[in-house]
Length: 80
Ligand SMILES: [Zn+2]
Image (cartoon, rainbow, N blue to C red; front, top):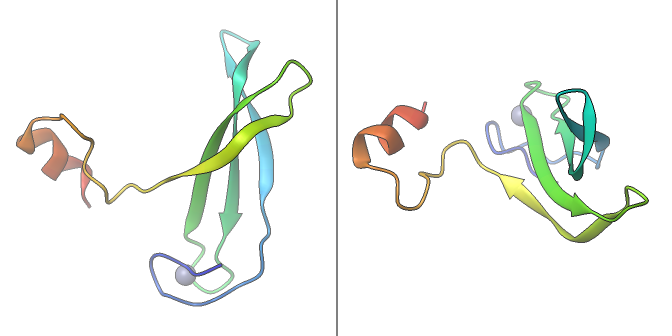
């Protein structure tokens, strides 16, 4: 994969994690991969089935992408 910050290519080193709310499991998981050059994290989310296995594709979370429908002031504040 390619780092979104420094553009270095590195091997997948995904670590999956289950999302909790109030200490209870949810039907969501996220996974992170760390760039070995600049330590930037890539983050992806997925719904999970009752066994905790991802359903469908992992969806990348890009902090530099404005949220659809968010007012411009909020969208700009999120881009740093
Ligand atoms: Zn990097």
